[in-house]
Image (cartoon, rainbow, N blue to C red; front, top):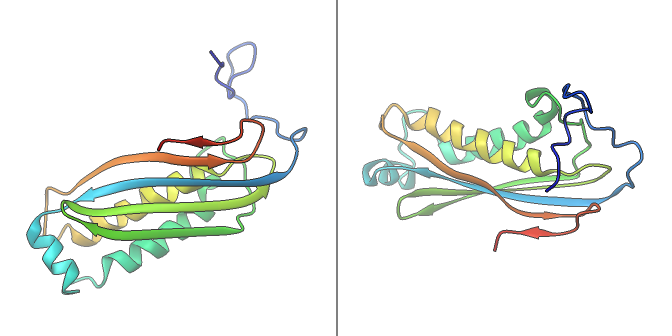
Length: 156
């Protein structure tokens, strides 16, 4: 079993030193769901939400959040992102979100993709809470990771 990388030999928290790692193309995809009532879904489909179009605002919020990941997660490295895309689609129980992040770096972009999905989901929650109080955010997870010494991870 691998050990946790953010602890030194004495058990103190540390930022991982990536200076010796090779710069490679890296990509990560994360997903999540926002569970909504049929009534709320009808409002979203009709674009009649009192606060505007939550899905477009959430998409932009997710992209912006990915760019701020190192400011939100204490030990994340600041990396240059070459792409962040957030897709949102209606499903029977609400909306499905998927975020893709890309970089050429010495460390991966999993946290950026996960942050994008999380903040996009929170934005939908915020913009829909006026019409529904029991919204559920669920199943935020890494779907795919490519690049680096560990190669490819795919949940599928």
